[in-house]
Length: 239
Image (cartoon, rainbow, N blue to C red; front, top):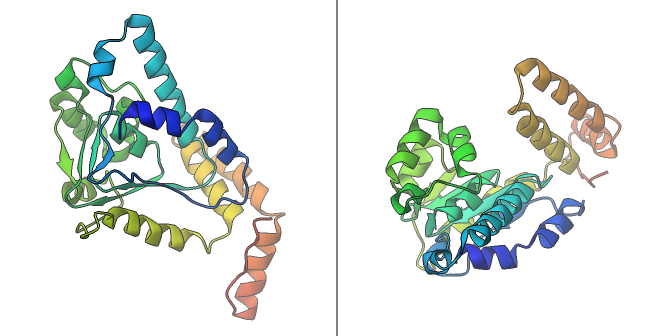
């Protein structure tokens, strides 16, 4: 539930293995700790770190979040509880987010004399807009799942279930909506959008054209056209 645990479990080697696994179509991140997605760094451990140790820790987390954001397949964060500080930064590194109404999310670093250091200052504005992101970071405010879906921080929110895994179940529903689609097309759409957001629209159009060209020769593109003409569901194989 802490970032130290996240850093150990989601090692860059594990994330890197997903990078090259073409069989994986969607990745869902969840926590098995009741009521907690990820509560951020262990402040007691952070307080005992010297400057170089702290720099190394934050650099490692920032690199891990970047690795997650660069995964070629869609990623979904299922927030069933607290996602604070680096915990929310982990969720923000994912493409999509689901949450229970009772979940609590926030970049609370300014209340501890810090600022978001694992991508939050860059990804939150891209998710909710510049002015609102500034308000949330400057004040360290937390929002619940219902408010989060209203401001676009999460894609879907739902009442928490007795088992405490409503967001995970909603993430699975979302993942199953993605699974039938052509995986190469989905990956290329993700690349086109992610890379296009970092450049001007003319450059973004060039990126879209490049990604589109990579889909044209695929067997899945041919299958999609054939299925449409034959009035049957397509059977995509990721080739």
